[in-house]
Amino acid sequence: MLGFNMNFFRSVILIFLATSYAFSETAAEWIKKGDDFDADRKTKEALEAYQKADALKPDQATVFIKIAKQYGDLMPSLKGNARKEAAQKSLEYSRKAVAIAPKLSDSHLALALSLGKSTEFLGNKEKLEASRDIKSSAEQALKLNPKSDYAHHMLGRWHQEIADIGGATRLLAKVVYGGIPKGSYQEALDHFKKAREINSKRLIHQIEYGRTLAMMGKDEDAKREIKKGLDMPNREADDAESKLRGKATLNEI
View 1: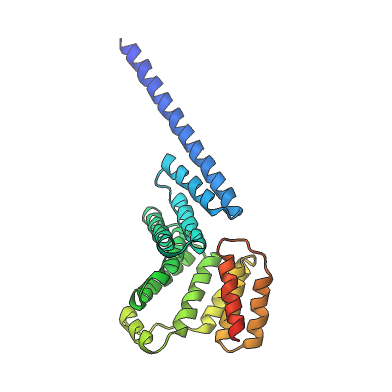
View 2: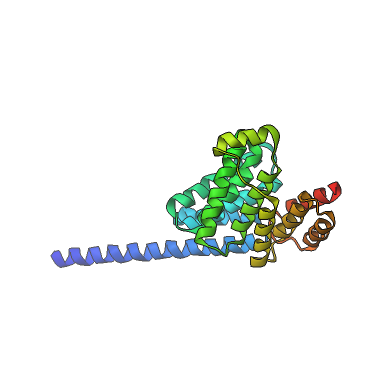
């Protein structure tokens, strides 16, 4: 009887291990499918694949990061409440990633990106509070991975925006930050330049580099650099929006 029970338990354990392995493999397959969809800029399909991977093997920070990205990538195709909900979902999953994997650079980068995408739905005070968190998240991402081009990009955007504020908003920034934050166009330019050096294929780095030159009054340089970005092929979901910003700046010069 004892031998029968031992054999039974061994069988149960083997079945459990085999099932767990199968689920793990299935989750990995869905992640691979999601990555392929993401590379092809098929955002909805990528999101669904990552969600299936999460259902099969929950609480993976890397999957949370991928889901957060897809919700953010969906935003350009959405309007109104749907756009806002996508931003909120992106923020929700990036915060989950940080909670699970605080030592992972991409967790903090995902949070910085999600916070950045959520600012359009915030008032001035909330935007400044979010910008403070964007800066700290991007700095942490860069500390954990000095070769993170997007961490440099986010810090460039922070300096770009802080350098551009004035009047009542600057006074509000003093309250939020506990002092006037030191943002400068030159610091922004340096971060965008570094981002380009790390990943020259991301047109968003090129366009924001050019836009910063325009903010500095270097119109001819700005035109040249922005046009370089506009001539680059779209590779990512938000590239079209980046080009619209670049064209708007060109029209203002």
